[in-house]
Image 1 (tube, rainbow, N blue to C red):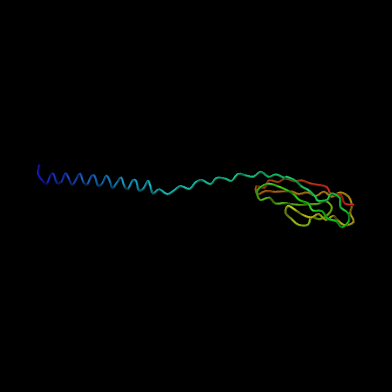
Image 2: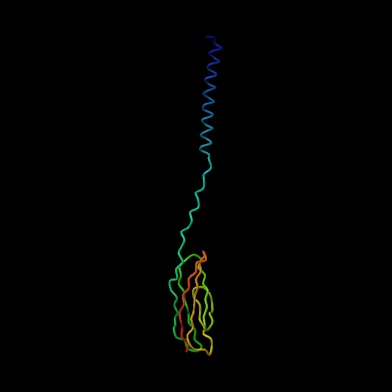
Length: 131
């Protein structure tokens, strides 16, 4: 064999080895540099709407008196809607004041409706006697 032929074979072997290493390195680089896939958003567990209690600090009122009414609820972003059959609701939120209509006696029904962010709703009522 001539020296040129042996030299060419050595160059070809070196070139093949170099290409093999280069292609392998590029493949590993692309695999290793793949962008991280974000984890899918896990939905937060829904908190079931519950109307725990509706209480008044007084069940019997006399002229000029008021009562504090408190609603206790559990849920997500709960809002409160209040109404009274004979009198006014003063304030908003989970604690309000009931002021009976002057010169009227009898029973007044106070109702609280709770609504969560999913539009689920529950209501409770209580009766206050006005003398």
